[in-house]
Length: 505
Image (cartoon, rainbow, N blue to C red):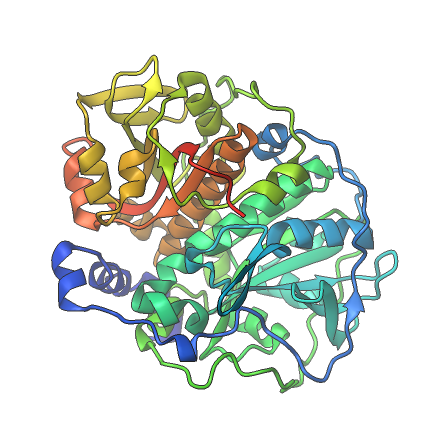
């Protein structure tokens, strides 16, 4: 098998997916105890590069959160060049440190977007042309001191134009953000399941980023079709430990295409070790390599497959924006992950507002990869039971009626949260056609999309002064519960929604 065909060897995804399923048996057979003395640091810190502070006093947009969450990308035919304060707002409200909590052992810093285990394994890198108040270069964003650090001098956008096979949004983007995941930071707790978490945790960051870009009227597009090795080389990543996972174009610049890619010398910039020692999980590298695109031909194939996917049927759907005018920045700052829910009901309008604002197409013009199934415990005007959500019409189809609080708790890894929630949203995907169409890259896309949708639901719930939390699950039990409707589908993610018992600090 040649490297170029790895993406089409879909047995590798099935091997990983099946091996990382949760079941009652798997949890008993493979218990895991956290080594707190070896917990990885949640920051990448370069030790020899001078910090370039980002402005902290930018004015808020005043755009209502629900409008920003539901918005499609801003018009892409008008030139829009981000200022340094625009970049600062996008970076801060996507991955910045928004609050801290003091406890016996020290301090915990919380970020703008939710992350499994609060381990924050994603780093953001900026590749840009000359911008107002910022020279062209490749930069790393440091949340710890809210600063950029220059890794490479000059305009290197041509590398990304080449890596994306001339993706139009990249060709015309004055700024491009690359999201890269660090295996060990998340694997310290979640071991081989970390690659699933890459999609979820990068997705919540992107949900915030898309909302902030919309609030700033800044064109933004998520790009998953790129030659992984070229992007990793641009950022000088040690790919045994950290890998590029997604790319986002930001803004629009008319004029000439960026200069062609150039030779990229190794940087070998020292960073602070994450922990005293790292445990290697080769399965993570293997699934990432399997879902990587090796050349421009594969990138073009990916883009062609995406363009042939059925179009999203949401044009006539009513998007509910009632119930809150809180600005997007305010909602992000108060967002948390609910640790307890009141066993109280929410309204049907609140539930539908969360669902309709969160399920706008992620891939512009094309239908979602994930299907949404719900266990409704306490929604006024809706009988308790199991439902399927029709994205195109915003209708809830009753699959079976009944009180499933105990079942929800069991499906959510025997935790109280989904049983106490007003409603639980399960994301399931038909992996067979996804993998047959997109190869292993489709698995990355399905996990990432679920994270984005979940991230939007977080924001929408908090905009309505409700609570939300992302959870893991017993894979096959979820499919079995929603079958026969969900037969053949795979569980991808779970969001619990309801009235939080108290605000998260």
